[in-house]
Length: 174
Image 1 (tube, rainbow, N blue to C red):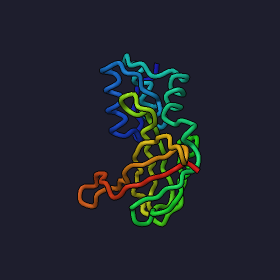
Image 2 (tube, rainbow, N blue to C red):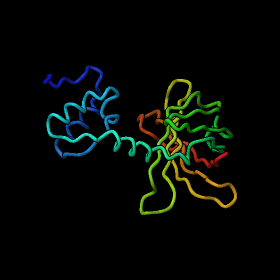
Image 3 (spheres, rainbow, N blue to C red):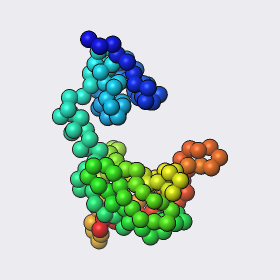
Image 4 (tube, rainbow, N blue to C red):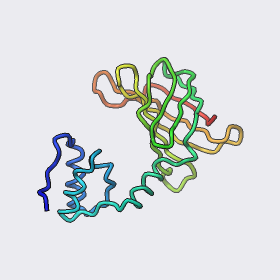
């Protein structure tokens, strides 16, 4: 067997996840550790259990529910994104159009906590200097517009660099 070597591109986060997986025996999808899957072979050799491809595909499908993919009309209190649209693509990428952002980074969803009906949805766009602009909120059924999505707009704080609330938004599926 080849020795387990971490690629020079592996981030500190990927290493930390690999060590946690080994220590706790957690099942982690390959994509979470490294874009090239380099850390997964280390996890497998040292007793961790990586997800099987079908488990990984099911986990990814749960993060990207097909009913949320498509176009969303967005109204926001954030300057430059007052009236815009965002397209959530089935592969997890996002597109949009607004003065304040130039392209999408991606999106992910999780079932709401406490067994409530709906999703917790996070959509991240990039402004013209590649800083993230995140729409973080909940998706609910609405009797008038079908699916609606509302929550907070987050952007990096100029002082700390940590995400800070810079506005609110409401959206509905087109």
